[in-house]
Length: 109
Image (cartoon, rainbow, N blue to C red):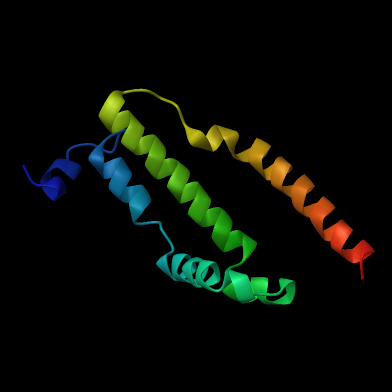
């Protein structure tokens, strides 16, 4: 059975349709900008960072990736370990890290 035919059978979590619905939400423009950022990382300055990808675009990509991981996990193992549950903790850790890093940079100017 083709994936497209299988996808129309159910939109329940863990179904191919739920996975495809999430996949269609990927912002490929933001993903391309993020790849461009990665490819030029060695030469980028702090002022250049926002030219590549916004925090909102990055958050959208991360949320889509988490949802795709969750849907794949449900389809393949039936386990309900949703990585999105860890986003807020990771957000807090990242905020603390970058606040301290940028503060240290400002202290050396």
